[in-house]
Image (cartoon, rainbow, N blue to C red):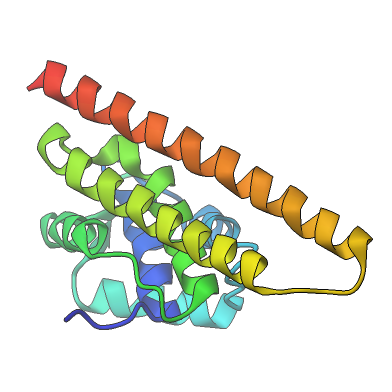
Length: 179
């Protein structure tokens, strides 16, 4: 069993994803990390700076010749391990942030890794939608307006579920063609 995602893990994923293959000025990097994590996770500047300092001390990111921070070889390996780590369902906000980050950095993956990671993201979203679907069906109210609203939310969730399944099939097909 894997450890649940912490806010530090998510900030690290945003940090490494932002610096893999490209350098970033420190001030823009901090803003980018905070924007990538929003709205489900809102780390403070001091927290992000602390995670950045930790990554520098561990030699996971380093300043390049242009005074930009870029992931080192070990930082890239850490990024790949984090992307391969399953999405966790203990905390809905952490799962949503993790899904968003993985989708944001999907283009940085090798085709061989992309299918399993995309399948994990789609599977996590489908499980979350299934939980929502069951919760909506199990709740009974006395108000027809509330019931209609819940049924509408369920219909939207079903539509998103179908779209995600089509996207997953498309990715599997594209990666299979590239291999």
